[in-house]
Each structure stands twice: as structure tokens, then as C-alpha cells.
Length: 112
Image 1 (tube, helix red, strand yellow):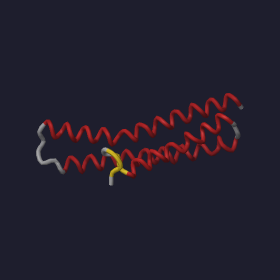
Image 2 (image 1 turned 90 degrees about the vertical axis):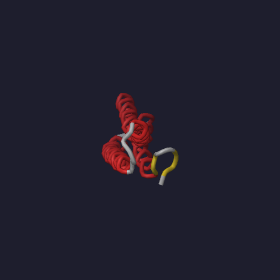
Image 3 (image 1 turned 60 degrees about the horizontal axis):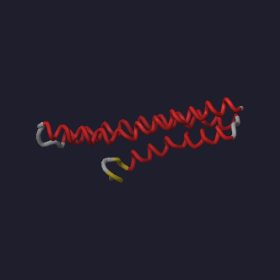
Image 4 (image 1 turned 45 degrees about the vertical axis):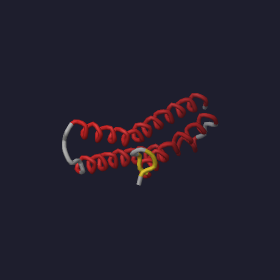
């Protein structure tokens, strides 16, 4: 099932899970504490696993698209490549949110 374009609900869930460490990191940057810093580590690991699962899902869905191609002419290949690229966007956004989250952690560590 798809939300918009070619992004599945599972991809959006993975993206949402990767935003949780970002929210925690902003909170840590505003009010640093050892408790929040300790929480960032398992949140980050969980978010990395969610991003990897989203990546594998994009590969699986891309493989299904390739298997359903009736011909391997250039327009069909371009279409599948475009859809595959759209499915990888949440993966990139997930890792980008983790990068930003750890910059906020660095800011919070500087403040503490």
C-alpha cells in the first residue's frame, strides 16, 4: 500500500522512527543531561536498523518492479529507475536526520 508516489507505509514508518532520535537530540541540545545522552545511543541504533530495513524494502520493491517489466526497452528501464530512486528517498532522509541529530548532541555536549 502506498501513501504518495511510490513511498510505502513501511518506508514512512521507518522515516518516522529515524526522526525520534532527532527530537531527542534537539531536547538534549536545549537541556543537556546524562539521561538523554544515554538514551540517544539506543535510539540511534534502532533508527539505523529502521533505515536499513527501509533500504532492503526499497530493494525488494525495486526487484518486484523489474520482474514485472514486460520488456527491457530504455523507457521501461528509466521508469523503473525513477521509481526505485523515489523509494530510496526515505532512506537518505533517515540517515540525514541521524546526522543532524548527532550535530545537536555535539551542541548539547558543548553546553554541558
